[in-house]
Amino acid sequence: MSRNIFSRCLLAVLLLAAAGTGVRAQSYGAFTPYSIFGVGDLLESGSAYNRSMGGVGIATRSPRFINVLNPASITSRDSLSFMTDYSMYQDNKYFSQAGMKSVSNTLSLADLVISFPITRHSAMMIGIMPYSSTGYGYNSIYGKSSLIADVGSVVYTANGRGTIYQAFAAAGVTFWDRLSLGAQGIFYFGHSEKMFTETFSASGYNGAANGDELELSGWTGKFGLQYEQPIDRRSTLTLGATYRLQTKLQGTVQDYRYSVGTAVTDTLYNNTIALGTPGNDVRLAGELGVGVSYHYRDLLLVSADYTRADWTGTGLDKAPGFAGNLIPGTGHSIFTTAVAQTYRLGAEFVPNRNDVRYYFNRCAYRAGVYHKQEYYLLDGHHISATGVTLGLTLPVYGGYNGITLGVDFGQRGTVKDNLIRERYINFSVGFNLYDIWFRRMQYD
Image 1: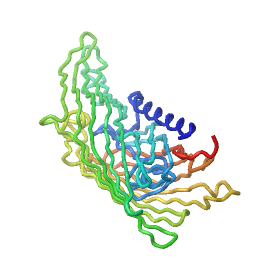
Image 2 (image 1 turned 135 degrees about the vertical axis):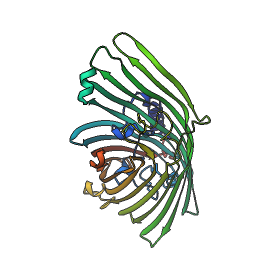
Image 3 (image 1 turned 90 degrees about the vertical axis):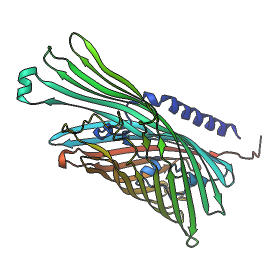
């Protein structure tokens, strides 16, 4: 292994370690009132490469990128190559509800992955990326005139933050040059805080605060396959499938409430609940995904994915700390788990990868669309998101090195039924580093 490759390997490992130790310092991976429920807002998986094509990847195979959505895809590579992918995304949301409007902006890690060969027909990848994020902050004033006359104004405030990450290692192998199988081990870990307070303007009354601090972890596995069927000498059809096992969450939920005033602060209760014990069984849903892609020469790629995850019965809508601050019968929205589904379609077009005269003919241009149904209901209403993505990869000196830029335009929710509508423009940037792992030196 040359010194240049060794230094890149060392740099990738150091970046991966830094990401793993520094994730707790990040306050928000996303900011949305919908993240008050369950394990938060489930973030889009994949790198900037996947995001710029509508999020597809189950049936996608490319030697130029690390496709983290299907562990079977990592065998599509130069058998001597070492690859690193690092992506960031920037989230911009505009909220609307009953005449009220607000905005938010966040910047977060999307993925950090390294991939390397084992044998000619097998390879591995290791990495880290966010799985879900809790991030919200809002307040309201109780407006009943009779209440204000007695105790003054009462302000209700809610704040939450935290992220669950997934660290993973995967291996894949190809048989008969067409069938690829992959397996992935995933470790979830993270911390989130949710706090709710009521404050009285009159000094003679005590306010109250309650909340939850969650320390979560869990192990699971994911399996994938891809089968390539040549149609003719120029085109190939690829079928793909993935299945992620259900995850039993471990950790603790600290559930507390206290009264605070000008004279004294009293703890009303402070309970620590151990997850995974009888009566406190909380899970992340398993997920099934299928996909198909059509590849014409090195010119055009079209891919479609479907995923389904049944969150009913996971216990998130009953366990303390996961159902927001909701008390049935008090007039608040009621959170219940549901079946999550996504439909994705994406395409990539490269005019001429080998053009030595015009640089932009070597760039990869991408577009995609998606429709996503969230894993919960609010007052019996499904919450869905629909979006359009655009992107391109700018090739950089040598090999498959490149910089990927992407943008995602979409909307989630509605202003009907007193729900919140989110309109967003998200930007992503990814850096793909490629080099030869072993090379026989001609001169020393």
